[in-house]
Amino acid sequence: MLRRFFAFVARHRARVARLSIVLLVVLVAVSSSAQEGSLVAPILFMAGLVLIGVATVGRMWCALYISGRKSSELVSVGPYSLTRNPLYLFSLIGFAGVGLATETVTIPLTVVLVFAATYPGLIAAEEAHLRKTFGVVFDDYCVRTPRFLPRFDTYSEAETWVVNPRIFRRAMLNALSFVWLAGLVEFFEALHELGLIKPLFQLP
Image (cartoon, rainbow, N blue to C red; front, top):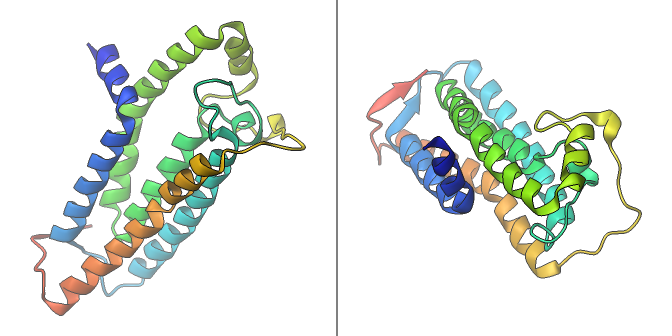
């Protein structure tokens, strides 16, 4: 049952991600931070911006290597030489950054817990497909490259790399989603302060 669920999520991960973003925006719209007015709030916000910056650049870096190759070639250089799932790693960093930009601890912690509960199974489902597609080549890649947390002594990169501009451009726009989400967080905070939207509850 769980295997079917993770296989379904793997096939529809873009839609699942969009739904998660909608739920996050709704939560931000109806809540406020209990840290407002304290020194903790700007510290959380700045930490969030740093993570968002890392995630945005990281996802663009991944897109540079994977664009147009995802189904036809096993990419094992650049960010994919550090970890087998750099896109998921940078996505986690980005969503955690957006969570911190809300100036709460609850939202980023929830993001991390949801990720920890769902993505290992999703990654396993995708790796089963890659193993079926690439066989021994993928097994060798798994031996030398960690599944999630990066290993920097394995880093390698190509001297030159051919990129599909159309796919890369679309991936760059997707990578900027974290920046736009941070802007939405600030927009709703301004609406709260102006009294145009009344928060239903506070989050620590």
